[in-house]
Amino acid sequence: FDRPTAVEARRCLIDSLIVEGEPPVGQRPRRSSLIGRGRATVLAVNVILPFAVAYGNLSSQPGLADRARWAYFAFPRLPADAIVRRMNRQLFGAASSSLIDSARRQQGLHHLHKELCRRGRCHDCELAAAS
Image 1 (cartoon, rainbow, N blue to C red):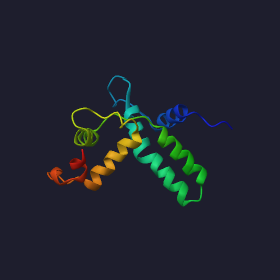
Image 2: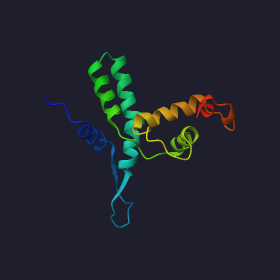
Image 3: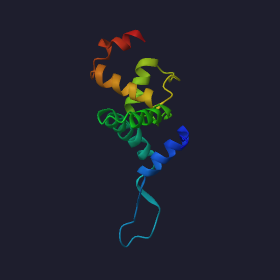
Image 4: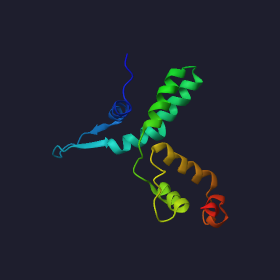
């Protein structure tokens, strides 16, 4: 059994999370998704892969944990959300940092925001003082 490439694994996971929608009764058919590619990507990075790592570790399935970790590490940067934009601005100023080049690093910004940021107290932040 050959291990799929990172791109193949990512595409397969995202495709499995996409949910196509049906138009309401009486409306003409149109293509729509209840969960589209963008949302499926966010779900994969923020929910499915972390869960698979944790489940693999807790259920003594190191292969599952390793494959999920490998897939997570291979995810490129997602579209920036408000927290990523804010933390990027806070830490790196007006010039967006090229250091934030993966979904994993974006998750790092989310973690820093959750652990260190206090609304309206940026001047007290150790990271803000260091940048």
